[in-house]
Image 1 (cartoon, rainbow, N blue to C red):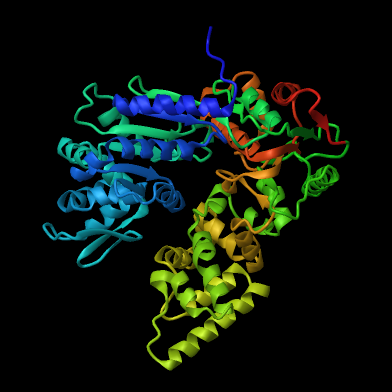
Image 2 (cartoon, rainbow, N blue to C red):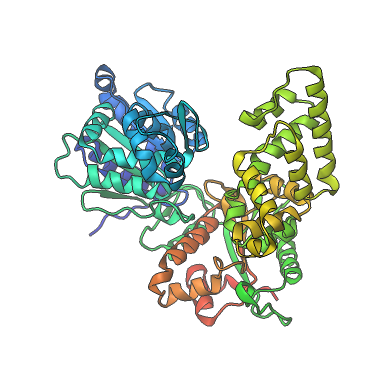
Length: 578
């Protein structure tokens, strides 16, 4: 008779026991920790176990345990929770890889032209035998008389190339006999596959580091990343615990994902789950393109207000940090938050919300913080925000000029367009615009109307320039999470007492009725990646609340979709909003 695990605490202990066994017997492993399972706790426990058991021996041999994280925040957390133990080398993946490859200068220089066409173009102008020192600092690709500056995106491809060399792998293993990968599902795909090929796949593990993957394949919500990792030599450890959510929420998550059943903690609340659909709506619905079947924006807004009213009457407080609205449809979000024209400027919403667009990235990450610091009179902070492009103040008139410029920028926040702001920035001397933004602006200026209409990037830029700058301010506030709303990009890792998940149409990436129908029937093979990404997004969103979960769906649902929702959440839970 199989052992019955009765609590999250017991499930967590069992996963630790399995992990310690893998470490002792030098077996590569993957710890699959579902939402709320306490993945970081397990990772830190693994590090601490190595420190306690063989930390002194590692230190004597000048060896360390590598812990590769996804963000700088995660790195700081690992260092804090291991008390900064010198045996642990916690770093982002880019920091870790650069620390290993930076001394291989001849190889790096010779390989640059193979990893990106931009490098091939830049290096083609360099005379044979005229080499450069390869450096990684600003994260922008450029070539000077003495140095080749790597982009953020160059580090991992170079690391993968070096991993193919046996001597490099031996040296790596000698320095790091243990390598833990945090958030493995979001790790650079080719890098993760190289670790599997060169370290996990070989049967002889004496000369390879032990690899431990920590994460959850169902929490991969972006297009890039390794996703699920499977290999016969990779021991799978399922952590069937949920320390975050109330029992009813855990039950719903288990119905969605029966392959990794979770158990709530012993003192978990019962909580509540409710799902509202709009199938009984008597008004018109949208019929065009990617919006087919959804309510019109004003009707979606009214549906959201009605749902919030019901929840407020049930005790939710949307004015506090205890309640969060997760909008898995950008159109309604943009309308609610005041940046609808900005969203409409883009063909692909991900380039906006992921800050992948050069103009958006610069304005949100650099320009807005600089203007805010200027208005607060914190000029040192303003210069830090501008970074390498900060103006050089050499004389008193320079200070007057830059104050005049930033006064003008502040004024444009109220009644100017993004195009007005760009024109002002381009008129400054020296320019504080990044090269990529400047070159796109120059290219737009030099293009005829038919060239622009045939080029997606130029068309988006032309639209973007017409957007009121105040919409960018609203978008910036949203990205900083200074509102009660979030989209998928503010979902992972966060948790709240109460969560309202709003599903609607939007672009070709979001068709929830189709998703639910495919999950209950059969999905076309060429759509499996998209299905898994959106399924994961829904799972992640539903796993955020600690106490109460509500789902609002503004798109019309098929009978198959409703049947699946009833199966996941319960017949009594799924109800019409109208």
